[in-house]
Image (cartoon, rainbow, N blue to C red; front, top):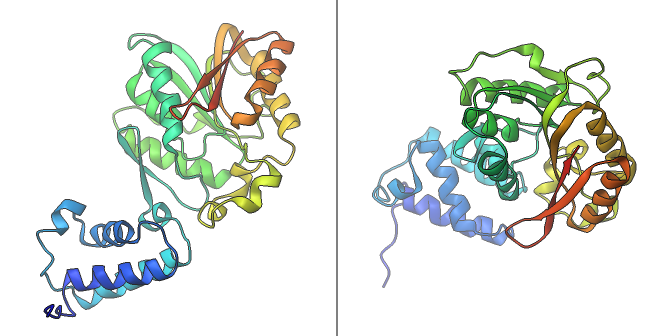
Length: 289
């Protein structure tokens, strides 16, 4: 006969929460239950295993129940935690910004390893910056660059500013380098760029209904491209105008549209190539002026 668990212990609440999330159809329910309680207790998941018999306080129980209910309503875990790890740093995230994806780390890795040397001086723009995770991660590794961050959403820019201060406390913060604009409208007359890193919306409207309930909680403005080709034409034309000769842009995009964007870029005068991601999908298009 299996001994009954003490209803005040950590293990009891993890098991009950796992059962509840599983019934609600949440994938990896045990993992989710452990991540949320570890956050409340300020422990790592590994540390939880040594504390299964620990009694939870009333406040801890109340917080845990609240998180579990919110997660059962398909609110993304990253929004509940308020942070998401990305390329060796922890970034603030909320409902104003997309949650950073693993494939976007591949973009950062490519730029750091193959495009920019540690001693290089350059000017770069994180276009559609959202949380700022792309530009900030690159700037952390390549501190001699002059970086700008641009997004149409003022609330997203506020998140990017906070992430800059948290991840790069050793670098001077300049509010003027964070620009609220729809692509290039606010860039007129500003300096030419060596590099552009762009992760614009690329979910197609016909795919929107197929997204998970969690993804649907993310900002639609940053996710769905209502007129994919027109939006990207404006983006790529502006990039050609604002890049220095020899300058490069890397664009994360929809794998089914990468070839169309390559042809568009070539038609505008770019040399363009497609870079596959680790899943062998046409995820990135690289444009060189």
